[in-house]
Image (cartoon, rainbow, N blue to C red; front, top):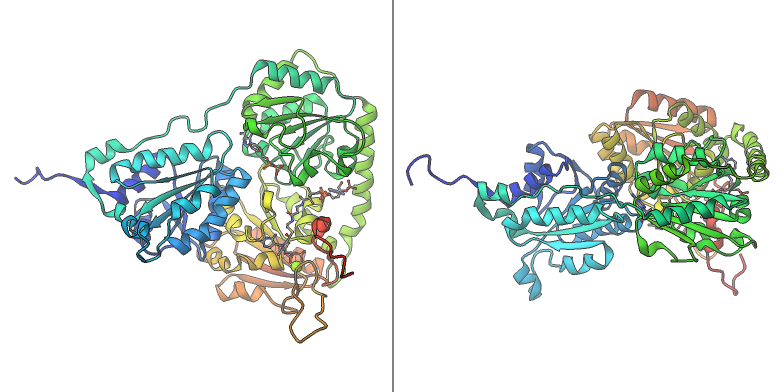
Length: 568
Ligand code: OXT
Ligand code: ADP
Ligand code: MG
């Protein structure tokens, strides 16, 4: 060929990167290795932020929560078989929690895998991923990369969001094609999560039921937070005058200190309400399936707003299902209510306020104790004020007692600021979620972690230090799971729920150049956290908690099966 006429070429590596960039995906959470090391390097060279973790599960939890925070799919990139499996837990978690995420894993030679001839990291990844996510695709030809990624993006964010698996065999990356043709093969996804407008009849039916209520309640779930319809939701709740109960990650959609917030009167509102409007919350175990003791004796009517039609009637009858995206639904509610709305009976709202004030007053003195070693309330009283002073900060929270008590004590003031274990109650989301929250939002992060919970992702403190992220990890160190006091009376092994006593997690942080502090009293804790939040330096505070202070499984001890043979 004459000079200047040789074809410009592209390859699989570059097409994947170009397809991601074309669709506005600018961060990848990954662990490098065969066959995706170069993909990560090249993506970084092309301006994508590639964040390397120490374990794929944490990279996956980061990607999932990035999806929740941004409404764009968070991308996790792993190697084949073991790396893929490590990421898969997070993909399943994202699907369960309705977070948009794409797990991209490199895979081995199809011809060898399918004949089970023992390839390097051989595994039929596509088949394994399928039942655990919303959709799973494989791309075999470079010219299909654009379409493959477009399908993955659409599947992740449209309708009920969830996790998508994208299988990219090693051979694909090296495939070469004409650069022009390659560019043309890419797809920019238009309107990836189209509005889903509710039917006018469903809006009217729902408002008629709500209007007729004597003791109405609105339950806001993390779907409502995800929708980013914050202003519409706030005006709807305020216009309605109906008390609202935020699910854990919906806290802050309206401030927990809002006069209509019924968070501190949870049992009362569940039991006593006659009409319940669910917005982006499922009637799963966290709401006792909408029936039984916690919902009281009186008959109840449920209205449900959800993008997923099959969610309706999943546990109890829904008398007014409203299928649509929350932004569109709540806007329609607001429009219909503009012509007039009567607030619920004052008898009901006053009863809730007084229950709430009673509970808040009961808790207040516990939050002010300065005991050493600390109990949960003494330590949480300090952290409550840290968030009150910095409402823009993001709170990540996991553990059992550490989770359940922090949820109740720490008020949230802004939407999507509380990130926790979600629908499955997973330990291990902590460091991954903290890292993604810091990177995606630019806000400081306070991660409040049980000592057991932290252990599931603790090695990522190196990642936090490496990227110099404004994350303050506070470990509630009570020497174990639930408590640090169990004893094994049979042999020299420690009891199954206890860890090394008096462990100093703060030293782990120092090992990587971060700030480590050992705090033995609320005063010391306060000083250390305020300093960390002000400096933005990676910090880990080992908060010494009385090993006897916690209770079995925190607030959900009732879920433990009991042996009739062995009394505790
Ligand atoms: O109305 P009433 O009177 O009832 O009062 C309620 C509210 O009105 C009131 N309240 C307030 N009062 C005053 N002021 C304020 N501001 C206020 N706000 C509320 O307080 C009460 C309680 O309110 P709440 O919390 O809203 O209501 P309740 O009844 O608790 O709600 C029920 C639920 C179910 C909605 C709620 O409890 C909930 O969301 N729970 C989530 C629980 C969860 O997911 N737990 C995590 C799993 S536990 C277990 O599985 C663990 N493991 C096993 C394991 C896991 N999970 N994962 C993996 C991968 N492997 C293994 C392990 C290993 S936990 C765990 C480690 C634990 O050890 P750690 O060291 O980490 O932690 P520590 O326990 O600290 O040692
Ligand atoms: P929580 O744990 O806070 O109660 P869940 O995860 O159980 O919340 O429920 C979230 C619900 O929100 C899911 O049923 C999901 O389909 C729904 N959802 C998510 N995004 C939207 C949206 N944009 N519009 C409507 N519903 C949504
Ligand atoms: Mg503990």
